[in-house]
Image 1 (cartoon, rainbow, N blue to C red):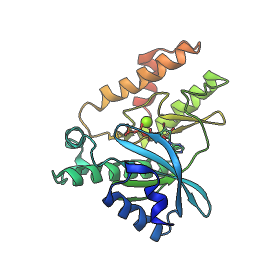
Image 2 (cartoon, rainbow, N blue to C red):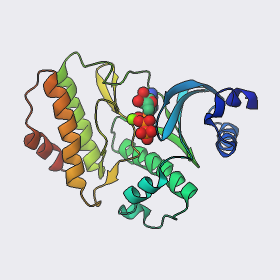
Image 3 (spheres, rainbow, N blue to C red):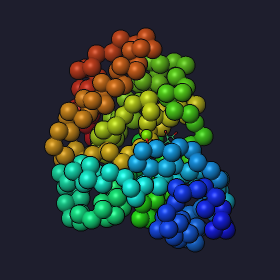
Image 4 (spheres, rainbow, N blue to C red):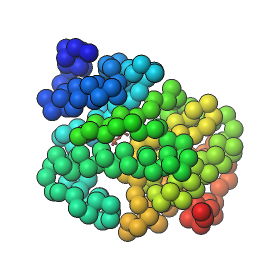
Length: 228
Ligand SMILES: Nc1ncnc2c1ncn2[C@@H]1O[C@H](COP(=O)(O)OP(=O)(O)OP(=O)(O)O)[C@@H](O)[C@H]1O
Ligand SMILES: [Mg+2]
């Protein structure tokens, strides 16, 4: 695709990100940028076109709060060798989301398939589905049970999402798809229990508003004790 088409999306792509996008198109991960899906605080998400259909690229801003990222990743044994420079921390953050998605995927958790990560850019599967925030489930109890089953699988994969809410779940024809895995943590991480409790709390507040009568401790234990 032409360089102008990338540049047409304004100042969201710095020079290094532009080069990264060219590299990924050269490798055949996508052909061109279709348009923005979401402009966030730490990242921008775009729909891109690939010959097999749409894909998503998530681009972490090189101006992201890398100190917070560093503090968050430091206790994770998977990243103990991480270097402390700004760009390398942001690149590690993107790689972490890629690896988390892959690991979840290997255990059949319903998450976008990650195709590639290069520098601050992650390429993944696109779901044509609204956020749970924008489309509440028709049958909350059924949807909730499906969600618990996804979170149990994720736990068995050795991960806690750590940023679960109606903002990071897609409603894909009444089936949950979990997204936004940059915060997801290995079970060896300190405080992992508290982070899972927070995830469960967010879910329960949401689903109890829809009329369910879920007990936080009981629902937490369903995930915490999920066995292989
Ligand atoms: N695989 C996907 N398919 C379809 N839409 C997606 C996909 N991934 C992300 N989105 C859309 O983009 C939005 C932002 O993505 P995501 O939640 O991963 O990043 P974010 O919340 O901006 O993350 P951060 O807080 O790190 O900046 C989502 O709310 C969703 O609407
Ligand atoms: Mg999000």
